[in-house]
Length: 328
Image 1 (cartoon, rainbow, N blue to C red):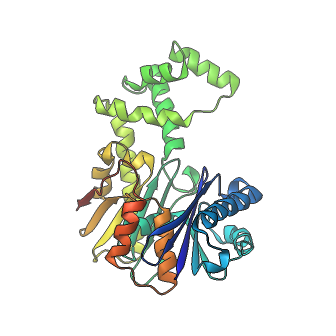
Image 2: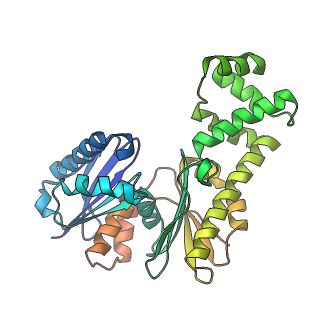
Image 3: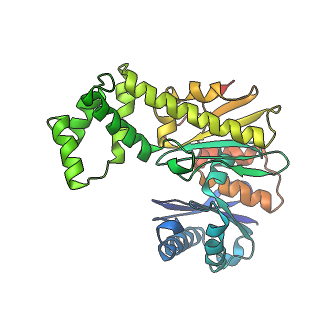
């Protein structure tokens, strides 16, 4: 029997899943941060811990694993792979590969071996692969390198809008009362000077305030979310154009708590505006680790059958996510 190991190692947690060739899960493991950019030894230790848990629960050894696929946050550039290759090699698997976590997110969200993924959680990223296997990443390195948004930067936009409204440079906004309540201030004036005097960091949780404000018709909140959607759409369009996929049917997979909150209604229309005919927006409904399993199987030469997708969808579905899609 062939067994496949999938790893999803992110900034907060690392998931390990072992399946047989039918997609039936035989072992699972969970540990902490697996992003080497937050500490190489920490990441290695947590990845190994998740693997050990999965092997223990399955009753298997490392030599029983036919192929392992490591989906790793921070695996963006050659400088990262110089660190990651020896780190993953030390884990002792005969057949394995390494991919960025954006790649496994894409593979988990579509039944096609090609397409585009848009990520908007703490940060933003976009990745695509065409039918010929050519890959391209657009973004993922922050505002100074061309990106806009993600939870951390949207929180800045929220506070900035409150300050601008207080100063009269922008219209009044429901975000003002929401921010003061969340941060425990009685006035914007007090907040303004306290943040400056104490050098306080802007809490990323402020991003969550955009959605209830937008639900109540707040124009400032809706404008911020519209810009985020447009910027994500521009990233996807750039990848589609550069990979020459303008004339084929493809899925654009949507990943991340900011992007999919409120069923994506404040961003999806503006993403769609930037895309070519034939694109289908799909909200990720399976855990990204499922994409690592699928890639491990494909790297081993398997042709993925519908039954495998159905097994993984049954066992690794994201709670509360429907298989929503929007045809353009």
